[in-house]
Amino acid sequence: MMVESINRALRRLPPWAIYVAAALWASWMFYLGATGGLGVEPIEALEHAYGERALQLIVLGLAVTPLRRFLGINLIRFRRAIGVTAFFLVLAHFAVWAVLDVQSASRIWADIVKRPYITIGMAALALLIPLAVTSNNLSVRRLGSAAWRRLHMLVYPAALLGALHYVWLAKGFQLEPMIYLGLTLLLLALRFPALQTRLAS
Amino acid sequence: MAGRYRSPLTWNDVTPRSLYLNRRQIMAGSGALLGAGLIGNRAQAQDLEPNTWEEITNYNNFYEFGTGKDDPARNAHMMTTQPWSIQIDGLVDNPGTYSFAEIMDGMTVEERIYRLRCVEAWSMVVPWNGFELADLLERVGVQAGARYVAFETLNRPEEMPGLRFPVLEWPYREGLRLDEAMHPLTILATGLYGEPMPNQNGAPIRLVVPWKYGFKSIKSIVRITLTEEQPPASWNMAQPREYGFYSNVNPNVDHPRWSQATERRIGGGLFATRQDTLMFNGYEDEVAGLYEGMDLAEFF
Ligand code: HEM
Image 1 (cartoon, rainbow over the protein chains, first blue to last red):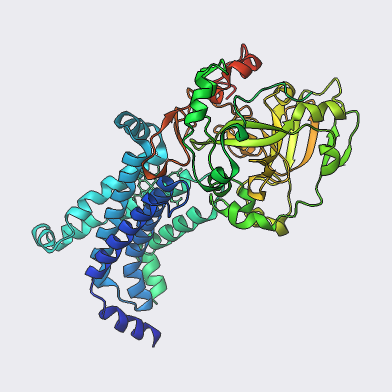
Image 2 (image 1 turned 90 degrees about the vertical axis):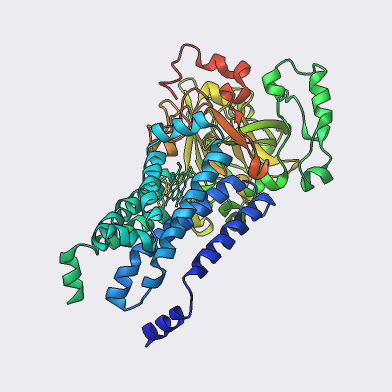
């Protein structure tokens, strides 16, 4: 019953609404940051806001298939928009870091090669680029659906690296990054056929 | 014995109360004062424009109240700071539990405008009020064998929601070598901007060691112990490779996860530029002698 009404409500929502909402949200956050609305350290606040939202969308994207398979909630129509939005937020996160936070090409480079949590964040970003570029109908046709699907499995390592990046940068033992990592690992584990058949039966 | 160290400026020299409470000041006047040669040390003179009350009290690391920078401002009101006492023990002549009033009795509270450099590569300038730790240590009588001073923060879970999470091994602990503790720059602060210390900044009494990363300046102190052995320090225990016992501000020794060469002054907004971090946070003339002959990359 509840699943049906959720699906009904979702059918009324056009996928492009996700792009619009994300663009509005990201601009609003930037505006707040520029005008004192994000506290006394807006650079860090903006960097964190974009990074955390990107990770949430990556996790949501990974949840689309399991949600449908195990709960019957259908988000398939939104999956592309979720993924592409996540990519743009990672890009915004990276841009805030590079331009507003670190501020110099030599320091950017030094950080990428020297600091493991930056290195793996960068690797996650790099893995997402081919996915974002091929997230259109033309690419699906050109590549053929099997090859396209194989390519998009890159989201698994990207998600894992993104979650590890968060765990790694936290000071001390903190709960929140562990929750994201746990969710990511769970959603990845659900991809293993053995676990799927066990859960489905 | 107060006044061994003269702050280049005091806050009431430069900022009327109504102004500092409202907004950041461009202190052309202080520049003129400094230029007039009131202070010999240029590194020390640069940039000693205090951050605003709002900045200092809304951007804090005080994990007992949560790991977010705004958590302390939100949660620290739960902490009871009256009555307050400090247990002073170990290698001292007069051990005991001293009430806040007993500690303050006869102390000369001074204004000290210090740079504060966090290990996370941000910084502020804070106009503290406090007295030299040496005055308290002299009063309780340091015994001959003592070589270190250990400090402990209040550990009261019902008033400190962050203690529910094992972010660090509680209670928060820090330590100094005795000569660092006796240095005239080292103070116990009881206020800022002439107001009583806000809870989120470590009320009612906290350590301030301006040439070390901020986490050494332990807040809301309930215990001070003179020891012979180097005492445990919370961040050092959690990640010894990242947080050394000394943790002197040093732009040449990077934290494994980020560079320490530059820092961002809080208060510059979204487009603030980074500035170079100074050796010993700009207090090199005063404190470098404490570490003569030590390899600062090894004893970081
Ligand atoms: C898939 C890619 C990425 C994801 C999912 C991601 C996610 C996150 C998250 C969740 C946070 C913590 C936010 C918080 O504390 O609330 C964060 C922080 C951060 N990220 Fe990323 N990130 C990614 C890529 C990158 C890249 C490419 C860079 C830079 C090259 C980067 C640099 C940073 C920095 C510097 C911080 C803040 C560290 C600090 O405050 O100490 N991230 N990121």
